Image (cartoon, rainbow, N blue to C red; front, side, top):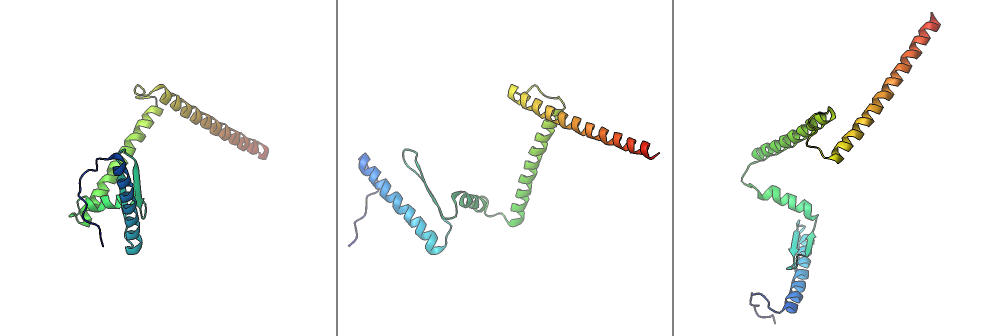
Amino acid sequence: MGRGRVELKRIENKINRQVTFSKRRNGLLKKAYELSVLCEAEVALIIFSSRGKLFEFGSSGITKTLERYQRCSFNPQENGAERETQNWYQEVSKLKAKYEALQRTQRHLLGEDLGSLSVKELQNLEKQLEGALSQTRQRKTQMMIEQMEELRRKVIIS
């Protein structure tokens, strides 16, 4: 014999509301798990309590399932070619942003456009430049030693 229908309205008693939330939340999580196992379905369940506490279940990871959802749900009427074109536009945008960041870094390394940098950023830039200068001096010294050795060999041979 089953239970009667439950009237769907907010439970006024705080304790009863919390108990009901806890039981129903556990039931939902259990059903999501069962659905994923029995039917090999990819399931994601996200629950926020009234106090903002997060409860989640993901059969193959929440993030992976959400990414898949976003790919499928936004503009589902688009065909594959349009979606691919959109992906290329996004890739171009990312590359443009990266290119601009590299140009900005190059200008900073050349001593240009330094006005917008904070003291900490200027200190980091100074460290980078000092490191580069040290490596340049080492390479220059190494090349001079090699040239001197080459000249010595030529003098000894002749």
